[in-house]
Length: 552
Image (cartoon, rainbow, N blue to C red; front, side, top):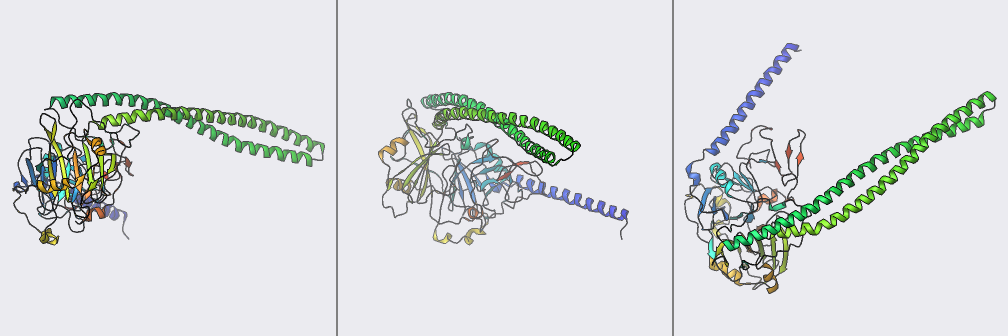
């Protein structure tokens, strides 16, 4: 048997061991982060962009990311993409969310510095360990210094193309690519659906077209922003009125609930009092002697008096409930009227907002349809025609990068996802590929092949007229053999995944809806009161011990 002092010593020794282990774990974690910060020059090609990033291209084969601006200048860095079974999907994505300090909800609170999400199922670009080959669980790890440098440059909506073979944007011009309306006219995007609230949903921080060098376009943008501001004020007023009436409804509902509870208690008390009166009646009828009868009469009178008091209270409570129900019904009716009045104001506000945002278009050979989104929400879709519909058309991303011809036309770039060559069909051929020189010029996309794809597409005139004038710099058109990925949803730009390439990371992470709530995301609280959402954990650093950079 251990003595009390021996047990105390044992507990103290165990506590000391735990403290030492925790301290060592934190030191190891800090050292891991420092190793990321001290990444060598061979991880990054130092360069600079002349303007904001337009598109990012990730090469699975060469384990390199290249971020291009409108002039084709680029920043390059090494990456580590998904390992076998967790492959980073090849396809077209965009930045959906940014968070400088982010912790994974999937992989034990793993730290993901400078996170830029590209799918709601959990795939993102972020700083991480770079062993020189695909090693992540689907994310795209970048050097710490590069991720830190890139983070403030990008905005939500930045197009991210993940390809097997590296490729660079090429300039392109084609009659099918939409042109802007004359500067004196305003775009008329009319989304098919809208949200009955004023949260930015997927638009928060979205790419705002740079029209500063084009006075006519700047004036056009300012006019649209003024209209949007006016519509927003009208919507806010209508929403405020509806919210005030909803608060009245909530108060009336609470009052009705309190009255109903009081009525329920009095109803039970009334039933009990009535039973007492009934028993007193029975005792009076059973009484034979005068003294017993007198005593029974007194008990009955007392019970009846108490029952009357409770009955009066019950009747008053019942009247209170009926009154509360009438007031609640009247308040609800007023609120519904105000809510109905609010809807067109909110719709007008959303339409005015979306007119100032770049347009996204997607043409699928699989479905023979054109889809249009603006502000990451659907506008419309329509049938189109593709000649030789059984022949592949490829996957091409066309991006309007700036104006030309005194702002009367747009300058476009294209990035195509090439089909994988025969020697690269086996992922094992590059799984252990060690570092090659990353300071090279990627082969430029074949603009002729991309133009040939556009040549095969016929858009009905009425559909083309709806598109005409929607476009600002930053607008894009994706053409692909593929249908829309299941990753395309609420608060998401078009996501296109190449079906012939491995999709391990997507299979391991089923898609969830985009979250909303405080700061744009649903809030959840764990048993310790820490806030997090269904995908990410906030303010939970090192709670479960160290987080190492080679887990995600």
